[in-house]
Length: 305
Ligand code: GYE
Image (cartoon, rainbow, N blue to C red):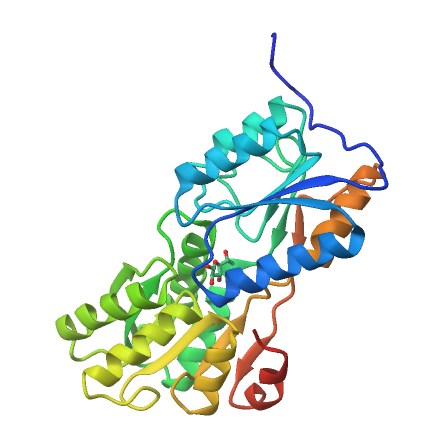
């Protein structure tokens, strides 16, 4: 019918592009490192980057994408805050003939598909990250722990999948019990507040699994405020690999963190170039994640953000 775009928009081959990057928030080192990487690569290529920061609001992020459409950018890189609310933005760009590449977070796969509605999702395997965090924790606690889970932003793909991978891995370990699970919105201060409340409600907790390092840093502060020793009374594991997290590993407060690399710039723009050339892009351009613990934190901190 009229106005219905059945096909994924193509991207013309040009020397210089005007590209949008719709960031979800900037309140943590991971986001800042990602934005820096995108800006640096755009600058290196001599492209114009239209950058927006949704400041933690899915509604603002939808408006940001609509504004990029109005400015007729050639392509939009989108880090969708949540899986469902950003679907209308993806569809609006498609309808306007502007290809979208999803960065670091995915959208609901029942409502939009790679290769049809957007080009691809570039990012980590969050289920696997959750599983690796669980495996480390099982080893560190000899399969016996009372765990508080600090979840990421509700409705975001990393929160959904990091929970899924972690909980699946614990199923075959009856001694590993999740006593409480609540969102700390991927934020340090929220993580601290939630950890404080949950530690009071569950004084028998022996471990904390945080869906990112910022919340783990908040949890460490909460543990210390409660007069307990992080890394001893309460074992912690998280995800990302920030400088503060690696320092906390060196200090013996954080046990381990599964890497989730925020430096998307080179891969994002290379994928865009391949798409413009007409190459077949896989539905998922996967990032490989390292693992940081006491064995390598000292050498890895030099490259940290
Ligand atoms: O782990 C977290 C950030 O979407 C993979 O979002 C990303 C996550 C990352 O705020 O720190």
